[in-house]
Structure formats: structure tokens, C-alpha cells
Amino acid sequence: MEITHSVSWSHPMSQHEAMARVICHIYVARMPARSLQELYQTLQDMYEFYHETPVPEQKFLPQPKEIKGQITTSTVRPDFAVDYDGE
Image 1 (tube, rainbow, N blue to C red):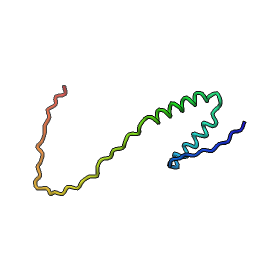
Image 2 (image 1 turned 135 degrees about the vertical axis):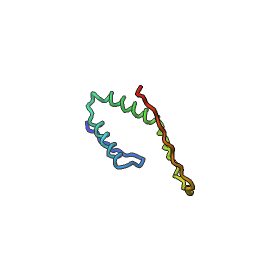
Image 3 (image 1 turned 30 degrees about the vertical axis):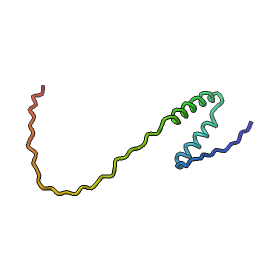
Image 4 (image 1 turned 90 degrees about the vertical axis):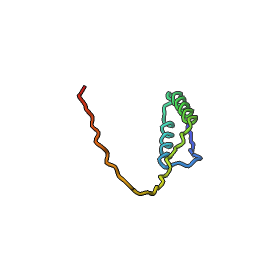
């Protein structure tokens, strides 16, 4: 039996992602028949996990604000001694 097919995606993707999808498609197409039940179950589980897991929203820190000011005084910190007897 000969099967021909084409592959297309409806969302934009990077070249790296496109190549990874094509390579995965080739791997799946070349799997032996005895592996298909396990392959099907594994892919189904992965699809359900990643499809149902929301992608966390990336929160970025706000841009720093410039604060204008001038140094009016400076203070020298006093020494801080610690006694340590090793026990």
C-alpha cells in the first residue's frame, strides 16, 4: 500500500519550529507498526497535557524611572566588630 500526504500549518512559526515539526513528522511516519499503539497513546497524552496547560503570562519589570537629585552629605559607617571564640 502506498500513502501520500501533505503537511501544512495554519499559524506562523520560526524556521527552527518548522524544521522540528517536519523531523517529528518523519519520525512518526517511519515508526514500525508494532509501536503505533504506544506512539498514539504517548502523543495523545502529550497533546492533552500541553493543550490544556496554559502558558504563563510573562511579566516584565517596568522600565526604570530617572530620579534627579544631588548628594548633600555622606556618612562613614562605623566599624562593626564581632567576637568569635570558635564554639
